Image (cartoon, rainbow, N blue to C red; front, side, top):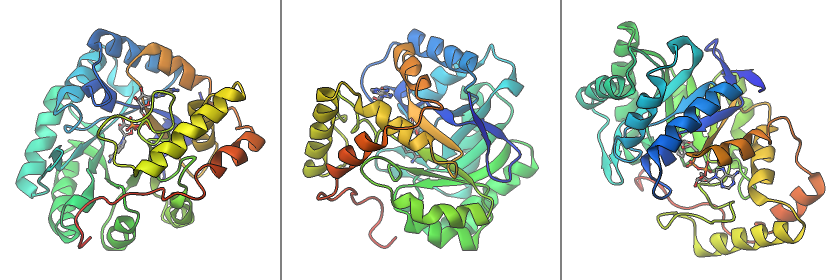
Amino acid sequence: MIYRELGATGLRVSILGYGASPLGGEFGPIDEEEGVRTVHAALDSGINYFDVAPYYGRTRAESVLGRALRTIPRESYILATKVGRYDRDQFDFSADRVTRSVEESLQRLGVETVDVIQCHDIEFGSLNQIIEETLPSLERLRQQGKVRFIGITGYPLHIFRYVLPRARVDAVLSYCRYTLCNTDLENLLPWFQQQKLGVVNASPLAMGLLTDAGPPPWHPAPAALKMAAARAAAFCHEQGKDLSELALQFALANPAIHVTLVGMADRKTLEKNLRCVGVMPDLQLLGKVRGFFQTVVTTWPSGRPEN
Ligand code: NAD
């Protein structure tokens, strides 16, 4: 495994991180026992960063991950979870709710402290409430020792431009914005670096878009982007290559990204992804595959219109 420092937190994180949303069944039915074995195999491989949220499987992912971690010494993993999002359209970033939320997560995860607590998909809330109410309430939990570091997550990149100059944050989580189809996050990376922020890049496979199986039914990408991804996958096949492997190698290779989170609930997928660590992408193939996305819109709307 290769490790990088997560900004100024002092945490040394594996560049491949474990995304636990599939443990909640977000990408289809799962075998929980296999999920638990996959978490253990991930730890054995040197993966030390685990990301989850109450939202994933509406608490199921936290419960399954908690069950897997219960037998593991606490110092051998870094645990990140979230507050504020509880269902597809249910958000509550109030001080009361997020404070209770952390207590509930601690229970489900079977730990006394969360290493990184993140405000989940803040574009669906009021950004001013995040700054004035949510982050200060997480700061109080930090003083009580219930959380160690604080982060924000979301899809539109301008949320980071708005919040970061106005609040103290240790880490940011961006998703689907540093992939084979869209690399807009690149513009912000030098600024994040200047601020010594921890940078977490989630969904390098664009939430299943850049896989042979294709995206889940709820995937928000426009139809033309889904078609371009299917064509890119077929092209890779013709070359005897795998689109997902190329996508993960591409994301892992950027040193300004400290941890790349991939969702994996079975050991076969884990093994496949571990083989991408430390492997540089084939640049010729990369250029051709990225070409499939040049003429399509590679983003989608997310959050409140006023944000
Ligand atoms: P992803 O891009 O990692 O794709 C996951 C899907 O791809 C799953 O169906 C998985 O089984 C499949 N997959 C994984 N590796 C594969 C491989 N090598 N070949 C073929 N298929 C493969 O999307 P994700 O799970 O949404 O993102 C990763 C993690 O990042 C999440 O689990 C979550 O922890 C985090 N995340 C956070 C936010 C947020 O905070 N707003 C948003 C998205 C993701």
